Length: 258
Length: 194
Image 1: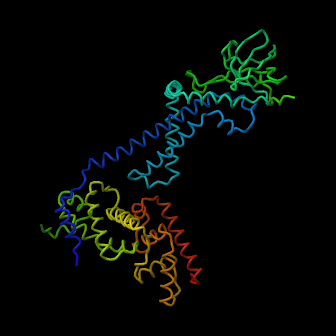
Image 2: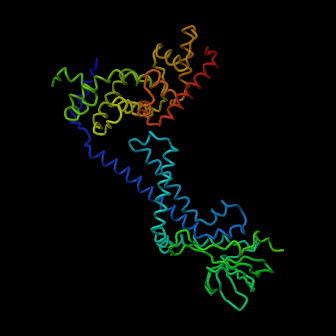
Image 3: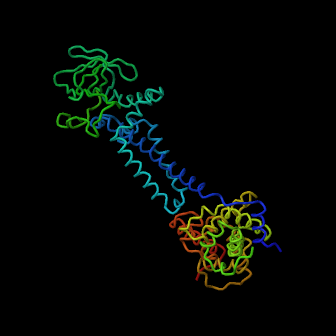
């Protein structure tokens, strides 16, 4: 009959089997926690960029666009950051579960922890402004990313509801020519009672704006409101962007052109 | 080397510390766990006695190699059960087999079913055991192994959590669902709880 204990000790001695040094386990553990930390940090950066885009949106005019809030949000925030945020969260969660005691907590508790950490750090990143620098680097170094950001402007383009975003090409006394994100030229007629948002400053060529009004005829719109088309660009006001004064705006969304 | 008898009374934790310096002390730990672990492997697999010995030797060598990774905040028995469970399941998968409890002896089988679903009524032994074995063998592994740990190995939820690396809530859910499933299958076979 095989004596398991004696045989095993014999095997250990014969094959000179040694316990794996403790530092190896400490290193493995450190790598696991470091990966968790970096995944949470990447998640935080993604979140910071998402809220930066969100805070750059003009929420006061979203009611003029079709669709619900979620659709509007998903249209205007680059998908890549939403997807990356979700990926980093999932990997951080899986990573935490692999730690020595990670299995003791349920998925919701770990998910909540990872979410709170990412959002908390994301707000910190947003205050410091790291996300802005990164976004600028991505725009400069990754051409498809810049194109993707530009495509967000198409989300505003809803001629049927009298909403035209675009770049001012020329300015006359009471008319401007606008090029929309699909390269169509629009004549924008404005009058004394047209509201020009004060944070837009003076209208000038090259400025990106959103015109809300009524379509008079093909490629001609009579402007009621002209707002700046906010893009993610350097500024240091945290959640203090100027908003349309609700008192100066019509209470109900503009109706479709007749 | 002969280990003085006084060391046999040492706790697992103390023996772990000695074993890090000398494998002879590890022999005491092996002697302590050989029988319960062999029985546990038998309960979650269908390996022959010879195969179980081979598996157990591999488990002990794995434990010895990783002894510096043992976390003293959990019971040594939970840790060694976890390694045994994982290694046994790996071996079953290598052989492309499904874990089964067909190697449970009749008493173990009867105990498992009776304690899982609080069966009180007496049945014709032969019929009952045959049916119970069929039913246990159709249970998914995740339910079978929690029922074995709880009702045959008599582990508490804390230990089961450390052995299976699942949160306590999930363990409780698996036990509840396993019992429910077992009960349903017993009813389907005409065996009722009274």
